Amino acid sequence: MAKRRGFHALIGLVALLTAAVASGHGGVSMEDDNCVMKIGAMRAHFTGYQPEKRATQEFCEDIPELGRAIIVVDYVTAALREQEVEFRVLKDVKNLKARGRYEDLGSEADIAAATLVHVPSQVYPRGTLTFDQSFDAPGWYIGMITAKDTANGTVVHSVFPFKVGVHSLWRYLPAFMIVFALAGLTYRLTGRKKVAAKVN
Image (tube, rainbow, N blue to C red; front, side, top):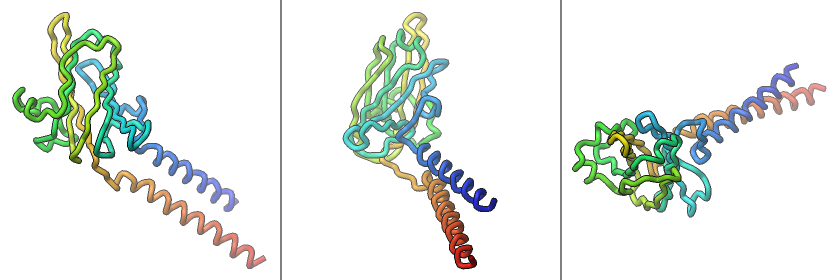
């Protein structure tokens, strides 16, 4: 019975380890909702790729490496396809980090001065906006979408802070803890088997 309980515990830890590794960036899905930008009542999906360094892996909350990145914004809400959409990437000059909101960015002049990438306002009937950008400095950046309803002139803004080239070991701490626990459990189980074999 004890052996069976130990085996089940081992299987459980393996499952937890797999989940912890899978939850890291590079396999983000829509269900995680990590990459969705809310633009008023509408939504768009923000994804970054680094084909030269990370093949087809997808990123949104952070882009792991410096250098070229392909940014793709896919409209989740169909109504966005009929609106004029402008996209910017701003340097986080005010050190807002993940707390950044549109209200914090300052005046139009402040936004223009902090702009690293500017994709002019236009309608995207296919619902996809794509551009290349080379990031040469690690740190926080702010993605910004401005959508204008051409029918009534309503303008809405959305910001999406993200990191580039910043690696945090704390993210992997749960996985390391599971590995150590797994190693300890394995040692304990195999140690019992050796003791039992000597007794017999």
